[in-house]
Image (cartoon, rainbow, N blue to C red; front, side):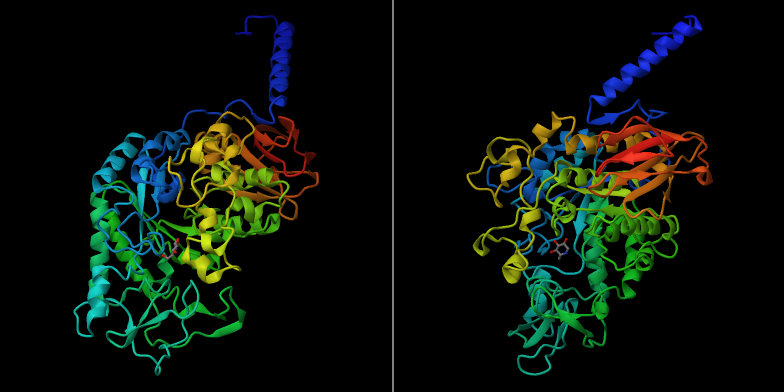
Length: 587
Ligand code: NOJ
């Protein structure tokens, strides 16, 4: 109703009535959405697509099965593109779907330019590319450059004789004596990183399983072969690569023993300082050359790194001194803090904002190698509220966001109950201390029907977790207080609100040990956004004074909140109930 024509007092009554009705409506929802932020139109984007993207990791084996064999497939991904589009996903990263003996479920590749029949055919892949494009979703492939499968023809040739032309494509050494490996290097998956090969009486190096021999990146033919594989997929239109185990590409050329540190790891091996087998400087030359390859294609193809790094200084190195290496080395320092500690998150998020030379961080809280964030951060009682905090950190900080399938519905880590059930060899070697990674790879929970809507098979490759009856896409789509709904609201806000989309990320109230608060500063004239999250199970009271950040007003209007807070709050006295979240506009 247009109230402008009414006399002023009457107009006020209408305005008060409208405000009251809005407030009543908002207070009836446990998670409230205030009027759309202004401007409500999507922000025009002249910068590369990946900069503000939402990238969604699909583990194809577990996403959607369409042929009833209990294993997900490419056609299943096609079938679920509508869902991904409805979540406004910009790109999917597919974990490896190349031919593989599947010792490491695809991270042991035997042919880099084909599709494993278990997932479908190249024609299916081409259909996926077309269908994804129609859904405005890009496809990112996983590229495993550090090692191949031992069944790769390259390795088969290499192991056949000491004089084979491909001998030097892998890392072969004499042992120190009979049955004694060349040095003390260890596999990430436990025990020695060297395996003796009786055919040629030498040892080969493998940072991962013995079935995953490391390539020798000091041989230029290896680089050529691998870059050719990249070109094969770039020619097919993929949007880029997630580079597996990339810090492990090079090893010490002198093959010296690594320094032994105190204590033992989960496999019972001594802890080693891995500085002779990880993060060697030579890798950066390769990254620069690979970047040239992707940059020779149109459309801002992207390089994402699997970069578990100890500090921000090392993180910065991966962008390249001239922004000529990876656009998005994953930041594992924020998402894998594994403790809901406001001070630690503040420090890490702030480092990513201030110490990466303006480069975009890529935050990740979940992937196929780690227990789900639901369990790593949950306290067993408030997991749902804590999952909303995780989602909020992922989607309201200034970063590109990476999600893992099922994260949005709160899938729970479901490890195998007995050793006999374990699929992941890590779990077989590490049982019972390390049960492997099956727990975070269980099938996607689509609905409450058979096999959670994932498959029609009598037996799926990993069991469907018991939680599927209530934790699934169908059920959560119909609930306004579900985690899925929360994710969708955040994703929409992040796209539409200029401050959340692109604003500087400024930490405020920096000495508060319980409440993490930051401001996303509007890059233009419009309102900024204050995000406040109570990390504790007790009510917390906070007072903000944001004048130094250019905010003159003393109230905030909620865009989204969780925990029953008012839609308009006085910045001088904010009471956050346990685990409450407040995201509101300030100016
Ligand atoms: C990292 C991958 O994410 C993991 O699943 C795999 O086992 C290792 N790299 C070895 O490729």
